[in-house]
Length: 146
Image (cartoon, rainbow, N blue to C red; front, side, top):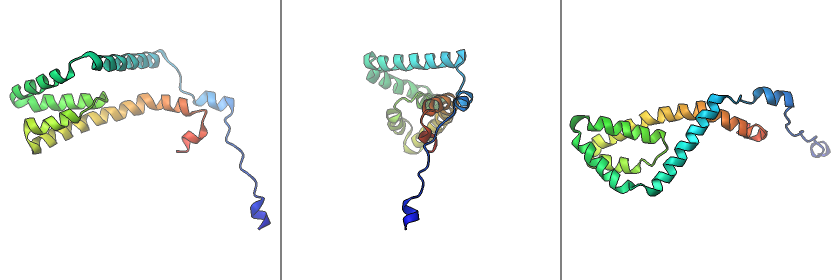
């Protein structure tokens, strides 16, 4: 009983400065340029959403898709995928797909668009944002244990 109460405490995790420098991602001009472009893109997207008549344009978009004929579903699926990668709200497109193409085809086109946008979004997050997350979590070893 006494031996279990006096068990030694484990020391806190620590990184040596040499190990932390070698595992930190390198900052390159390309990475800084990509980050700057992404930040500018999201700022433009955010502020344009405040001042652009999105409701009118979405109605015109649906009329345009309907008027495209047989390749309307292809354009709709492409736009759905681009909106998925851009982290834009796709619920309006999902709901309108049922109105435009009917429930079975609308579900199919929405699913194809979500999958075609989800793949590039996964690789973008994995290749671009994972090194940034590792660099931010590097001083916190508990972050890596998750």
